[in-house]
Length: 251
Image (tube, rainbow, N blue to C red; front, side):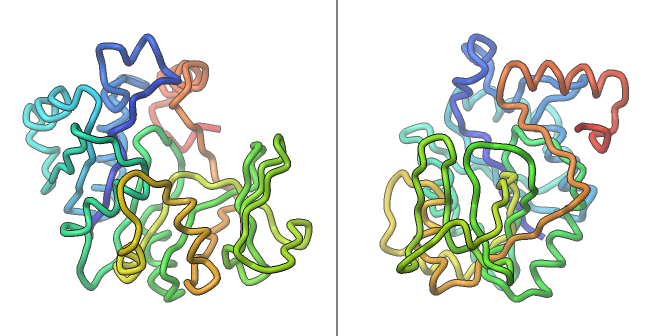
């Protein structure tokens, strides 16, 4: 099974820690963010991984080599010339991601207790073109789904902005879920990216095609998740994992 890890970010929310160290190599609970995601993927049965790199990329290259790629087949998607954001990053990796089987995408700065194999299998069973791990945690920005858990729009409660390609869209009629940064995608979705070029967000892309493509929510009620891309949450996760090394305890 194939997976992609987003590790190219500048880590601006973690400055000055990321001035000389890429975000992916910052440690939490005694292990780097990158190692934690790689080992979680490996445990779930993923055996081939592509990692995009940009900021201080050589450090990530050297780190992977020093650890023998943690026993996996690991490829690199080099974005050192131009940082492509999440959607552009996936499109650049298309030659690796294309095939008959779906692939999983995981942000490097997300810790969770999700069963990645179960998420993958749920996607395969649903025959959706993409399945997004979501929860009802409190945030400012939400993805909006209908009663069949199909993506229909997006809403920012702080600014009041609403996005949807459906006419006469009323956000109050839809279920609000927070996206986790973990999703499973069928290669057919890549064909819809043909006209998209350069840097673009995968969420904006999802919203542009959701009226014609089946993009589903996978709401896990007992999901425990923490975004360690911020200094305060990184410190909190480090404290929690130092006391109990299982990421299942992260709340």
